[in-house]
Length: 269
Image (cartoon, rainbow, N blue to C red; front, side, top):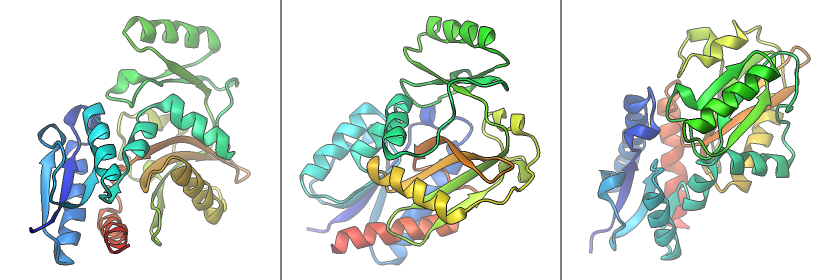
């Protein structure tokens, strides 16, 4: 029986303003695996429920049914990237925040003098209304009440951190780790990043950021990951977001190669 690698795309509702970018990185990883000699079939997450002939599975899916399917495949011994438990952790901001607290990475305070971010915690952001900014605590309370009236069950409130917004991307088990400043190219997702202004490019310890991100990735069982942090004027780093399999739009070719590398390693192992 010919065994193939299945590549599962992400439902559009989980790709706000990033549908094409998300599709491109999955296709890029699939192409790298094809060049290595593997047969790869790309399917929408709504069209896939597991397969007996799976050699491996790479998945950007986030639907609960997809998570359950990934877990079943893992139980059957199929290498899966990212794991079902990893997707589950990153699709719940409360859970991933708790994981980050457990491994001791620096997170924003719950109180501050520069405003507050209110973030949907019972899932990932599917639109700009799932992440809101409030200039003071009174406004934060009003925004929280509005979000809950709109059906958002859980909201995390974090104080705004001043400094450079830095995005990081990684693939555990490979040499790939990339950072960039979205303020340099103005490539925003919702535009919230503008609140930190033009980056000053403060010096910081890149190896320390990579180590912190790696610890979160390991604890969350998320091999392919991305996130955001703030670097303050003193070089201090605060992690403000961590997620499963981002679009890697600024470093797609390198990321696709690294993803293929870790999948092949797991197949051979």
